[in-house]
Image (tube, rainbow, N blue to C red; front, side, top):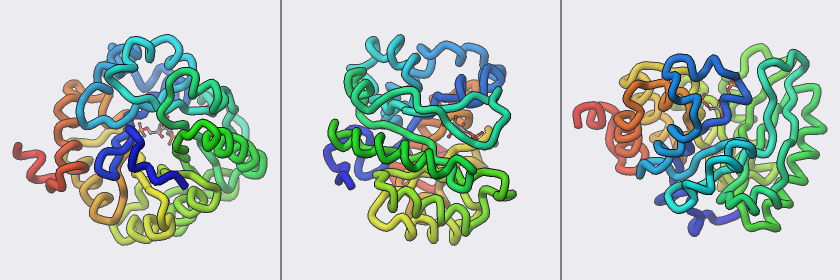
Length: 262
Ligand code: FBP
């Protein structure tokens, strides 16, 4: 496990990952609420906000846009992904290597693992190559740990999320991104399962400012090390304002109430 003390993707041991792989994972529908977000430039402008420690994108977006932002934003290159057009059992195609990620200027790499899928074994083997390749490049590894598959009817059950967090530790992720399991006790259990590795909460579909900041506050108090968020930022008309609030809650220890009042 990397200590992450020198990594630009964490600030004071915490991370706010701006996720923008939705064009692949969900398709154009996610850009409909705020159409200018279909342009990656808009997201890289947000990535320069002080609250954002890194931005997660796929290879093509990084190749085309990151060169203009490399002085002002950090890059987390997602190394696998699947479109919503895929109707099979949960799986994710590896589309970039850690070596090429490093060439593109990545500060970290990301990988989705669908524990519980019929493809879990192959995905874990692919993760081994990614994790060891990232170690060779000195890059931290962030696992999107999403238990899914035919046998899993509820992917946010407390036990399932605790297991998801533990998979990150066991397989060598430095940071594991999990869905919020619904209450602070369950999140605390998941963070404890990750032991020395860090857990960040996944943003999820857009909610109102209060509900969102309160959940982030709960997750932080439960031991999370931050957030990986897409839609709850870029689907807002004023994304800078929610980033201001997230900065207060994640890095300054403010309550959601204080962040909303400021
Ligand atoms: P959101 O904050 O918008 O949920 O983004 C986080 C994320 O993990 C993205 O990186 C990814 O594209 C998406 O969620 C996957 O969402 P799901 O598979 O749950 O539909």
